[in-house]
Image (cartoon, rainbow, N blue to C red; front, top):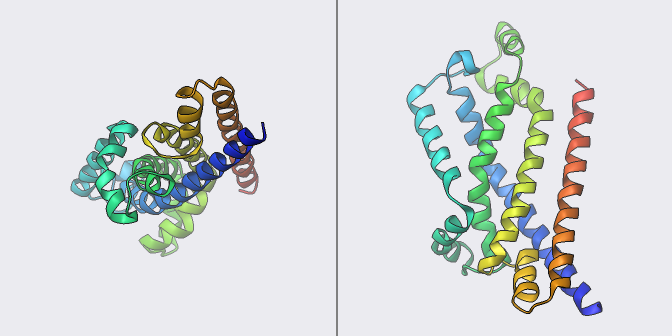
Length: 220
């Protein structure tokens, strides 16, 4: 049992590292993309800098990336992972495809959240002489924050699921533990514990995200 717990603790740590790092990188990639998708859209949909051509191109790129199954995308990105981190397998290497896979989802979440902001708030900011960048960073983002927190929560939960799938091709973490030690070595106890830990992580993230979103909403 002690050996099993050590394996589970180690695998949980790997999963948390993968999810935390890929969440940060996917936000760095997806936040500007999501903002661009929103502000370059039609005026009647919240676009403050309408650019139909750019918006259409960005939308198609995001849709194409979102349509790739994660396992296939991870295999396609093996060369990129090898270039960036020097290897295509393991915990660190998995962060690359996880970040790229989650970025389009983050972009759509941010776009949707910003579009929920009351247009009257934007019009009021315009009337006060605010620039486009001021409207984005001082009006749209703060007003959309409760919805953004909910979206980030969903992103983290998706990344936990992706990280588990990555274990099927040497990604490390709880998914790798469940497959290599549980399935391949006929250890149902290892698989059971791995699944329980994954479910616990998802539940914790969901509860924390809901509370943060509700707290921000109550302050508005």
